[in-house]
Amino acid sequence: MPPEPTRKLKPKQAQIANAISRLSLWAGRLAAFLVMPLVVAMVYEVVSRYLFDAPTQWAFEISYMLMGSIFLLGMSYALSIDAHVNVDFMHDILPKRWTAIIDAIAYFVLTGFFIFLTLALAQSALRAFETGEGSGLSAWNPKIWPYRVIYVLGMTMMIFQSFAKILQCSLRATETNEEAK
Image (cartoon, rainbow, N blue to C red; front, side, top):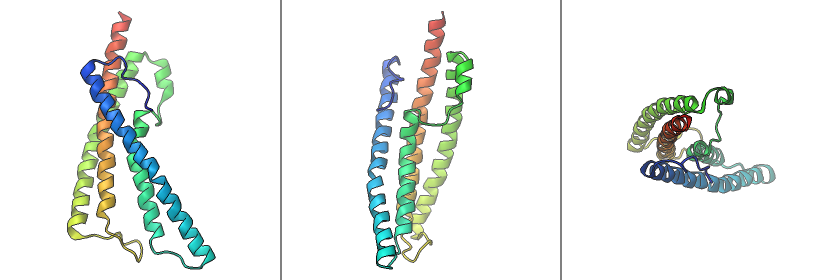
């Protein structure tokens, strides 16, 4: 479960941040569920290739699409539980109010980047759907638009989760300021 950084948030902001974190939790659970089909596909490929000398045409495509989906859907969950790279020494030497302000600014910039990236990915997914684009990486050559839709969903989840982080950081900055008085 995500930590409870929102326990002292104001009611409306807490509801928004908690709802987003729950959505990220479910995206993370979906990502975890996708590990099983990935394992099954890889075991099938290894057995087929090495025991029966009959490699599949689809295993490579399935593996990168499932692994990419796991990563893309799990990103927002990782952000919600703070399982990301952080510059801890800055958090150790600066006052809590300043670290909250710096984090809020960083998440604001990241949110802008995520919005830009999501819009570009949405255009790419739409173009792949309209043209019937295939992957072009194997003889199987599956349609690529469903995978690109996962790109868009994963990045949209990152937009929401980084917005929740902005709420949490800005309120942490004001709480810390009030505690200092």
